[in-house]
Amino acid sequence: MADGTLKVGTITTSSGSGTITLGQSGETVTIPSGATITNSGTATGFGGGKILQVVSANDNTERNTNSTSYVTSSNTLSINITPSATSSKIFVSLTGSAYVESDNQYGHFTLYRGSTDLGANGLTLMYDYQYTGNMAMSILDSPSTTSQVTYQLYFKATSGNVIINPNGVKSTITAFEVGA
Image 1 (tube, rainbow, N blue to C red):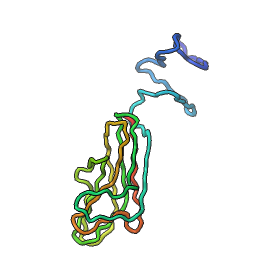
Image 2: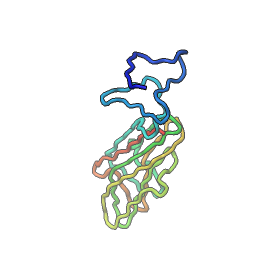
Image 3: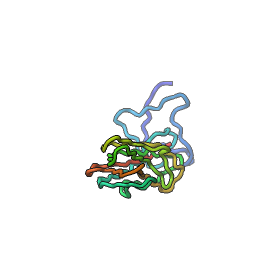
Image 4: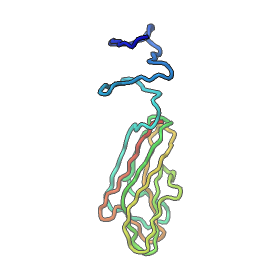
């Protein structure tokens, strides 16, 4: 069969509903460079890994704790995200700075989803001298819900005082919904 060009405005089934198939198994349907596909319905079957939404929050207020149990670090360093499907994954990334005031002290940091500690052992910073260090944490979570979930940084000290955002350094938490 010879190659040809079909020019139409609309392709529909004879009944006005059902499935239209372009190409056969093993064939490739190519969209030329510069062409645009517009979807006004639901697109399925394109595989996963698409970023569906991004939510971010910042905090540059110095906050501290001397608690030996995890406490919330900041209600402004907290994000709410509502997954669009139960199969979605949420990638959470946090960057910032922390300071330990006393020698031989540990600061512990972790990410929570609601009341669940996602960090297992968390991020531990140990200092032999007073020291400011960078924090960077990330986790890929599977909340399996389409209800709103909250992600937040928690921290604690072994003794003395642990500070986040020392001298107004900005911390950022970002959540990315990744489609399945």
